[in-house]
Length: 247
Image 1 (cartoon, rainbow, N blue to C red):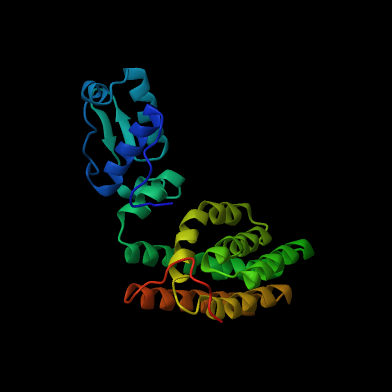
Image 2: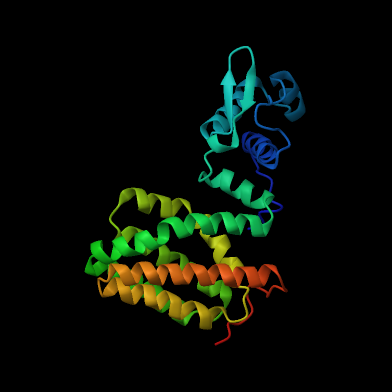
């Protein structure tokens, strides 16, 4: 998916949501400012007021705007946006510089992934451990960086599920899109395969051994190294995603 140039949606309703949402996220319409008046938007898009109002309700549901009587639709403060909403997340990824997005995501990951790994070591069933192990084996079998993406995502989702905490599992699922972008970035490192596998194996081994402290530490190490890999990439030339993996 090209987040910098998203494909225009086919339905007029979807197009209105996308274009207004992107204007808000990019700062074209700032927090506290009103959306253009209904008659103006209806004329611009060639739609009726019911169609426009339905699109506005979607933006309200995403936390981007609030509708006020006799005022119109006003853009909400950024900290009130539903940042894990898939559309809002995609628009944000497309707007932010690559490095800024990655740093923001890594901060979030470093807060909850080590704790989730530790909890999984305590809570995982045999089936959970088998699921994590199967994802790791698929990572081992990957031939290209593109092949590594899906099993890597599944590895992290399986750990979240193994916590048996519904909130953590939900957060893991909602972050999958952003995590995929993070993995794509670090996979441009020339030694992706050789570097990534031992780090993930250490997490899996600790969880399989029911060692919460080791699982937490292995997750911390993996994330610290992922940050270092990304920093080296952002400061130098990037590799093509489908280049065969070394190691």
